Length: 165
Image 1: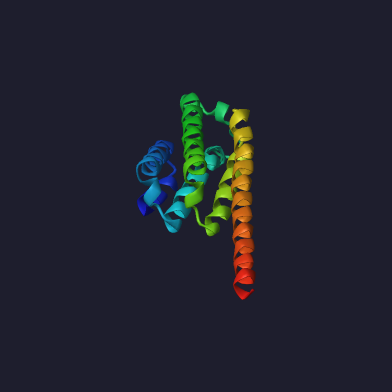
Image 2: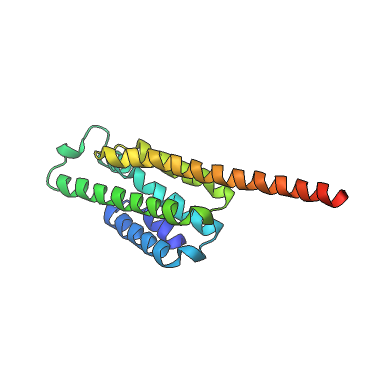
């Protein structure tokens, strides 16, 4: 996973797009075999996709906007959108298919990742709203886990009371 992390830190937007497509493929093919540390690395790298607009603005300089950059501005915007879309696709894949595989220590990472996409300066408001809905999905899952844990505690107590009687 370290090579993908290195590529995600690259300033080349096309490299980031290819890394995210690789991450998506890894999740699709091997998601059931990924463990806590692997999920953490994947989630952190997926979250980096939400920062793409900020990084490119920094690279171009504070005084230039994307539209002021001559020639490649439409390509840059298109690639930024592709990086955002692919990162968001990976996040949705993790939450919809592998939330139960995440350890408790990864929930902070997943919430941070969701927050980044919810707050991203994305022209597609639907993805921002979908990211906000993801908070509810994760909250529902954690509530379900809490109910199951409480039910187990009640059953243990009942069995202890009945065994002492």
